[in-house]
Length: 285
Image (cartoon, rainbow, N blue to C red; front, side, top):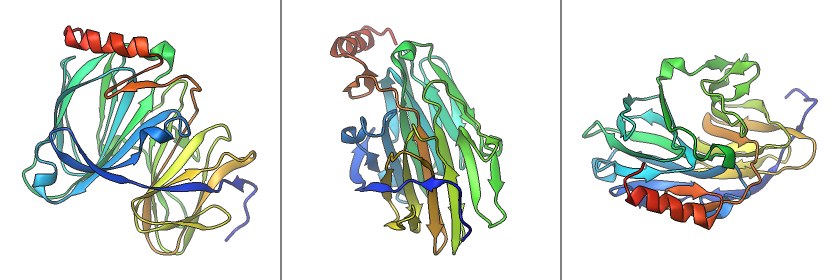
């Protein structure tokens, strides 16, 4: 292993996901739960769905509303059809990403377009600052071939979904929170360092294999999330794979604003939540 001029962050805590259902009964693992929203600001939620049993996913997510944040759906395997109240429609396929800005309000559905086979992916919720919570709703489908990907001399492959890594600009750039979203694939017996701005909150979610993180080499097993400490000077996270492993590395600039949530609405005050509920019931989304 080569020495690095950067100080690696360490694992502050390890989180085991909570099995649950959402939508019309889709089985999933909820990894980033509401109790972590302040600690991992600007991120509000992370779910993983993974099953080759159609009964776990076939009902999908029928029409439901959102306001005040963005949803990021990353599909590793399977096909999901998106439709929303702004007239957008798209098919999310293996390797692709859907980045949706709910803004002031949107009703959408996400329904599987397969009756068998593996359905595997993630949905991340990214908060919006108060100044953008009532922004124009938006939607973008990013097919797999439009996600920048690079491989290091050691054989580590990184897909740069958002932000930038080692000079490679990601498919999505967002103001204010400036999220970094990487899918990192490491072969066995490999080290890799991902640069992270010191003032960002960040976490690593291992979805295949296991990794040792930081100088201390804390072991993180498959389907566990490591919350990264914010020690001054920590400008990267060091990943070590003894055997092949895959993980999401996610970080962003915290908003440091109040969080008021009621189901699919995330605002700054209770009054704004009550207004969101009222607007939705009156068909204003």
